[in-house]
Image (cartoon, rainbow, N blue to C red; front, side):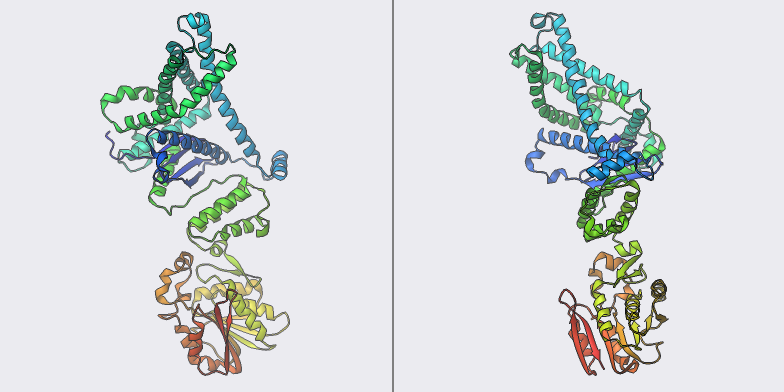
Length: 610
């Protein structure tokens, strides 16, 4: 099958899943022990945004090798945390003691140990053993003057490189003895087949992916083979150039010197190998097949046919990376797993800031979910998997733009819990000043009317606060039946002495009142599309649109307000920025009026006495 789309996206198998990496993002998808698919996605620096010297031929190979190695190891370790879900309701004593004493999780300790063990095993297998076996042969054949010569001999270095390849192959065969690693090779196959499916121009479905080859030109296994092959040639030439000059008489010192020289040459080997791999991947001619064949043969060992669930993981990871590369607003995601509070908070704040969301929302999510004050979030602790699951759910919903208090379903207003959803506006902190002004003026026995009540927050707060030392009655009205349902719920929740009725301003209102309050829609129609996404896309337009100049409701109130106020009655209105003086001009028949500023120094309220 001929390839139609050549992609830069690559990946690797991880624990019970697949990691894919593109230009702008990388995504790891894991199927955990419960059978659920988990995804973690984060943005990375695109190659074109790296400094020019890092994009030079040969240098870019070293950079890509190092970044891929680091990100691959991180993805592997993170996948293990997400894959294994068994967790007791109460942490084991050791886990709890470590979390409280050292502010880290036991998994962090195991992760660090695993890294050191992995590096140590790699050094022993691929550096020490080849050197040791070659020394044995060299000694058996007479050392420097023997059949293969000493360390400076080309034959010596070719044999050492041959041992390295043999050990590499034996290592792969050894891993096939373990069921868990054979499963990882199946995920490796799913990764290759998914990329091939996309490059063949076929829709990414499980059935289509199944049909594709599990061999791929840009496989890491092939890259490692090329690295070993080039290193054999290079180290052989190095040995010839140096000769037997490195002879201190102490084998350990000789080995260390040679090891350091080879270590210094490794970046060059990686850079050359990357360019060779990239060149071979571009050429589809059968003439280069012999050069690709060794890599394909090794991939026969390191890939296995995946099942449908494994393919689903690979497809999800690939599509997420593709979306992140094409859409800068595609959100990052995190695994549900045990983690540090500081790490979780930093990640959430950074992502919120990048998405134009107030970073303090991350603090609110953690504070309310963990039931700790925001001021205590600086104290390190370990967030359990169960806690993390709830936090991640809220975090990801917030990234969609849905307002935080709609997500939680309630907010605090003047010390009272007010239920809110998309049927009503979320009461703003500055509106609490309207309640303060009303409380300062209301008298025992007064009748109060609130127009455009929405969630009922103002009416509830006023009635409950006044009830502490006064007896007042409050009527709250709104034209929206949806909003009135929320208002009635809040009245019941807070046991407030408030009557809720449907009315278009004064339409169904009877009698006179000592005080009338209103926070009407005051956003100019033409400015609604320019509002924050949270307001524009989620809060009810009916509660926002104040007409062409934002003053339509104020004019309607001015027409009839005096009919519903007793002599000396008071009207308190909230208004938009730079609207206060225009509102005063509408209410020409009045005894006196004052303008009150909010905490930001903005003219926010108009208090009028008739």
